[in-house]
Image 1 (cartoon, rainbow, N blue to C red):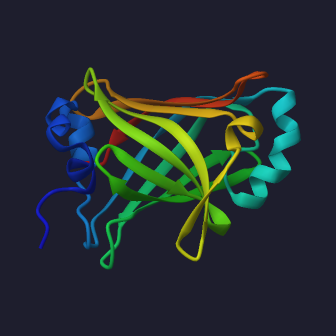
Image 2 (cartoon, rainbow, N blue to C red):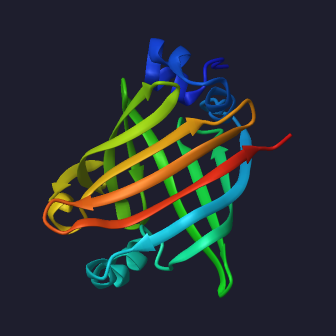
Length: 199
């Protein structure tokens, strides 16, 4: 049985640079049935006028949150898998019009490097670092997984660059933000909020 968590393996020595609440959050081990749910609010969920053109495409691949809102109750479910080292995410945004689920799974591929996949094998390569206690993801390119072959796709020019961080607030809470920025059109999508670990 593997005693280290998936992200402890991905980050190596940098794991110890994470805040304690972030390490507790990412305790999920490879080849296990580990599970955690964090609950909180997305203080701001928004997109630009240009981004509206991308929403149908994003919904097809299950990759974007299509609604705007403030103080949206949100649960994020994380599951490990007994058969591999993947982590499966189900983000549940509880908008007044109904719940919206943003599902993906993350595959570790190398030191400080994971790929997050949505539907149809579309993925984004992410460099993972520990910075001032925060867990930070920066994209390094998009791919399409076709029968195990990774085909680069020009996602930067269609969707933009992704930045995600989870930063400690105290012993049981953390803040998070996701920003999708296009090189020509600026910020397309963003959301940010505060979450607490289950007691």
